[in-house]
Length: 500
Image (cartoon, rainbow, N blue to C red; front, top):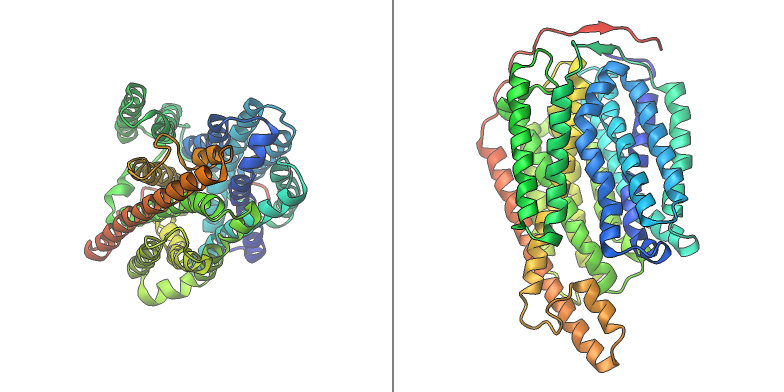
C-alpha cells in the first residue's frame, strides 16, 4: 500500500492523536504545585508522578512497535488510545500519590503503542514522494501539543483542581478514537516469524534500568552504589540484547541500521535536539515561576514562542530539506539551536521576558526544522513493512535524549548552584530556598531570595553553555562525516492483508 485516497484526512487524525499524547506531559508540568497541595505529595512523589509515565513509555516502545506490526498498526493505535484515555480518567479520580503514579504508568504503556503506530501508518499510506510533507505535518503536531499544553494547564488550574489536567485527555482521546475508526485505513499485518520474546524482555529491562538510573541519579548521586549497580545491569542486559539480535532468526531490531552513517547521524541529531529541549525547558520553568514569580498560566505562555516557531518550521521543513538536502537541513537546525542556547546563556535575574522568549524561539526554529527530516531518515532506512520497528526506534531515541537532557543538564545546573559561595542557605535548592524565605522576616527573606535567584540564574546559564557545546559538536559531526548509502534491505516480509 503506497497511497490511499483518505491519506490526508488520516494524517490529520494521526496528528490529533500525537497532540493528545504530547499535550499530557506539558499540561502536567503546570499542575505539579496543585498536585502537591491536593494529594499531599512529597517532592519524591511528584518526581515519580512525572517519571512513571516516561519510564514505562521508553522501556515498552520497542516491544510495543513489534506487537503493533503483528496486530496491525491501526489496531495498536486504537488499543493504545483506549489504554491511555482510560488511564487518564482513572488517574483523575486518584486520591493518593501512589494511585496516581500507578495510573501514570498505565498511560505511558498506552502511549508506547500510539507513537510507533502513527509513524508506521504514515509510512504505509503515503508514497515516498509525499512522505516528507506528511512527516512535516506530523512533526508540526508535536509543536502544537507543546504550544497549547502549558497554556491549557494554566487556564484549567485557574478555575479547577489538579484532576482537570487528566480529564482534558478524555474528550481528546474519545474524538480521536471516532476519527481513527472512520478515517484511518488499516495497513497490512507484518508476518516476520515468531515474536522475539527474549529480545523484548532484554530490551525492555535494559531501557527501564537505564532510564531509572538517569532519573534517580540527581537525587541519590551519580556515584551511589545502587546507581552503579543499576547502570551495570543495564549495560550487561544491553550487551546480551545486542548479542541475541545478531543471532536471532527474527530479531526485534535490525542492528545493521546503526552501521549506516546516514541513519546513525539522523538518530544522534534527534537525540541531541531533544536532550537540549527537555533539559533547557525544565530549568526555564523554574526560572520563570520562581525567579520571576510568574503564575502557572503566565509561565505556560512562556513556552509559546518556542512552540510557535517549532510548529512553523516543522510545517515548512519538507521544502527546506528538498532545497538543502537532509544533511544540511540538520546542520542548520542544530546551528539555530546553538544560537538560541547561547542567547539564553546570557540570562540574568532581571532579564526581560522577550529576551528569554527570543532564545527559546530560535531553539524552536532549529528543532522544528530538524524533526521531520531526521524522523523521515530513520523511518526511510527500512522497507515499509519494518516501519513499526523504525517508528519505535524513533520514539526511543527521542525519549532517551529528553530524559538524559533533564538529568545531565539538571545535574550541571544543580552542581553549579550548590557550589555558589554567596548562597545564604547552601544546602537548599531553589524551591526549598523560596519556601524557607516565606517563613522569614522580610529583610532576611530578601537576602536569601536574592542570593538563591542569582545563583540559580548563573547555574542555568552554565547549563545552556554545556547544551550549546553538545549541539555544536553534533552539528560539526553531521557536516563533516559524509553520509553513506543505505545497506541492502532484507528480503521482504510476507504481508497478510488486514480487513479494513
